Structures are given as C-alpha cells and as structure tokens.
Length: 486
Image (cartoon, rainbow, N blue to C red; front, side, top):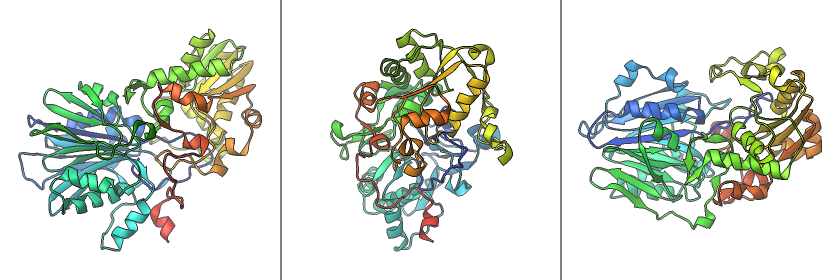
C-alpha cells in the first residue's frame, strides 16, 4: 500500500481493500523494460486499482535521466502505446496503488523519483510504517519538504540521506531500513542497480525472477509468469537483494530475524494474492482449499450446494465441497467490467448497489440449501445483502461459512481493517451476527487452523487475536497525516 492515508470507508462498502503491487526489472542486455513492467502490473492489478506508474532509466545513457509516467486509474487506463513507447530504459520500477476512499491524488501515485547529489532514486513500496509520522516530523524539522502524504516518501528521503554517508546504495537502504518500523516490500532503482528489500517480519511478499539476462522483482509470482520469467526464489524476510550486471544477485540478510519471529500477512493467502501465485513456497490456491476443508471439518451442515462469493471465496468453497462431498456450484454472476471507475449508486439506491457487481443465478439456487463461502466479514452489510440475494432467488436455506476468523482488532501493517467499534464481530456474538445477516447458520475458520492452512508458516494474526508481532503504535497512524497534525 505504501501510505498512512487510509480513510474510513462509507458504511455501504464492506470489503477489505487490496494491497499495493510492486515490480522491478533490470535487463542486462539493454532492452527497454517498460512493456515488461506494464504487463507485470497488469497481472498485479488486483492489488490496487487507484493509481499506477512506471519509472525507467537507461544504464548506458545519461545518469540523471529518468523517464516516468503515473496517473490515477487502472493500468490499461493510464498507459497506452504512445506514452509507454516514450519510456526508454533497461532498468525500471512500477507500482499499482491500493484503492481508498480518500487521499486519491496523483501526487500520491508511485513510483517516487528523487534527484539528489548522488544521482537519481526511483522507488515503489508496498506496506505501512508504524513510525512514519515520527520520522516525517524529524525530517521536516531538518528542512525536508514533502510532496505527498504517503509514508513511502519518508522511506525514500531516508535512503537518499543515508546514501550521502554510505559507500553503496544498498548500504543506504540497509541503514534506512534500520530506522523504519512496520511492513514494507521495496523495489529501488539507482543509476546502475535494482534493489529489493523486505521487512524483517516478512509482512509483504516479494519474489525474484529471471528471463534470459533480465532480472525481475515482483509482489507475486503471477506477475513473473505473465511475462514469461522463471521464478528463482522469494526475498527472505529481512533480506536486501542487489541486482547488477557485475554481481548478479547479491544478498544481505543483516535484518533477518529467526524464522519463528517472521509474521507474514495471513490475508495474502486468504484474500489479497491471486490464487495462481505462490508466496514463500506456499500455494495461495492450496491454502484456500485447505481453509475450505477445515471449515467443512469444524462447521459441517447438511446442504445441497456449496458456492463461493467471487472471486476469493471460490477456492475455499471448492475445498469445502471436496471435504464434505456436497456438490460445488456457481451461484453468482459477477460483472467483470465494474472496476475503479464504477459510479457509486445514489443514496436511495445504495442498499442494492451490490447487485450491480454481483447477482444470484436463480436456476442454480432455487429450492436448495446453500452453503455460501466468503473470505471475511468486516461490518456485515455486504454479507447480509448477499444472503438476502440468495433467498430472494429462492434458496431454501443459506448457511454462511467464512474462511477467516472473526475480525476483533484493527491492522496497522497495511490491511485497512477499521477501528474496533466498526467491526461487527467485536460488537456482536456469532449468533447475533447470524441473525443480522439473515443466515440460517454461521461459522468462521478457527484461529488455530491458520498455520495449518499455510503449511506451518509463521504468520501475523493480530487482527484476530490482538497480539501483534511488534508493539502497535500509541497513536492511530492510519489516518491522513495532514489531517492529524492540523
């Protein structure tokens, strides 16, 4: 995500927002990389639909010259053959930004490009810092002038400042990383190097790929496969990798913690990542199948059909079906053309706004007992409308199963889980939530199943348990910075 400007969503919006997606490419043979970044970002579009951008440089050309283009909108809205063709360079970074209800400005789009005494720096960031406000104030009192309200700019400034006293840019990234706290996956473009960095807990994913003599960094493996690159490995939690023609892939694991202390965001596996991706060696698709199987084991119910709420509920629904023996079927038609530019319904129509994006297939559900699998319930408004949609289509019963535990705590590391008083599970019992949804029964994934779901990986469960891998901030750093200091 790369921002501290998470805004409260309107009450009728009841789904988690996506993360951000980052991409970096270095072609040692000197070929232009903008098109590779474009298609990689296209594969990562699910991670953010607010804005996107690409910055490139020619390592054999003018050292301080960086060509960039970024704007509000989807990848195929922002880029066209004309502006993409103007991005000449064999080294570059790209970014898709996560969607919020506020702070939607072009200035906050990434990548960020800085010109300073050591040359140029291009950077894209996915994550959220918990000490960004403190670091920003320190920089401002030493004369720094900020152009954005995102914490990514704080990281970029610190890297640039550290570079003045460091022998190499990767050393500057290391020194900056020691100051920042929170979640981050970074791709950094210097005049002659591509650098990837991942926070010590590994909250956010980052992987390495290769195609001929071109090297790639990407948030997910699906981006590598889209451009025909071979997956090499994941960047380790706390690792900084440097890619250059002279050294190939070089690694610094100074920031790495023990494996037991790593804390990957479990929602990458439940919801955020594409099911055809693998993160830290674990298949996202298999994780969702596992979640469905566990739901069938722990929350069984007699029914005629298992269905998923598209798209993230589908694999879990299939897993439930495989474990229970209840047939799996498609009960919803999703409008694939409703994206970022969707005009929100007027207030008088908002209660049915979900129908513009999703509709029940009457022939599939009429007279049947339905098990409906979804990835999460935040406030409960959307889930209730979908249950009602199924019943209006003739479903005899609707049993809701959720492939995550109940949200009880906010997230400070990049997932926009709101304040506790906005979380339905914090305020209500499961029976009360069931009644509010209008469901015949309700079951959540057990917290104890989460590690098993991802083959034993160490994960962050803070939004379910209130126990975070690091101490949360004393002030709520998720609001817009300038709103908080007025």
